[in-house]
Image (cartoon, rainbow, N blue to C red; front, side, top):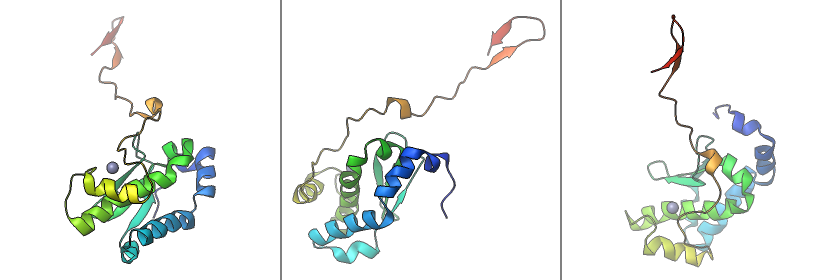
Length: 151
Ligand SMILES: [Zn+2]
């Protein structure tokens, strides 16, 4: 069950979901797994939107064989969806077929290259406004006798 989130109600996210339907995303996954010769992994690998992701476009969770995608950031950069999917699913495939490896090491890079995708591990998108806000540690408190104090 998907937890309701205000992220999913944003118009730009709704637009992203219109284009990147579950079928479209599954289609990319099936295509790339077939291309890599491991279509048998298609039932083992899952994906989901995770509205709690902040500045990462996506992530791979090995224990659950899940790819998570950042809806808010990808709504802003919808052209990245395919790349992020392939980037993350490559992590799962490498782990499953080659065991624990350096995350963006030579085997992972070989899968990315074979898929015709850049093996860059980080993005240069502007995410400054998406960073988690620091919780204010200091509380402005008005004392009973007069001026505000900061604790
Ligand atoms: Zn990665």
